[in-house]
Image (cartoon, rainbow, N blue to C red; front, side, top):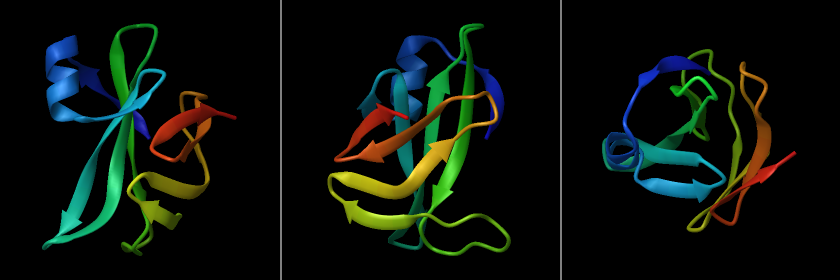
Length: 97
């Protein structure tokens, strides 16, 4: 995961339409018509957006999470960001670790 820039709140919500709560948002990543992962994004105290991709279908040398449920989204194991954010996406909600 990495810092990807700044967005105003309207742009942040539009670009990352899935709301996991606690300031975490996302959008699905597709290969053709098949969802293969999700970009999870959250705002840092500086106002910048930090984001990374969580894949449940293997992609080159990227880590792979287990997709337990697509709707509501649940992936395991936990998600740990380079910025220090650590938590779980369970039942479509962000849960701090």
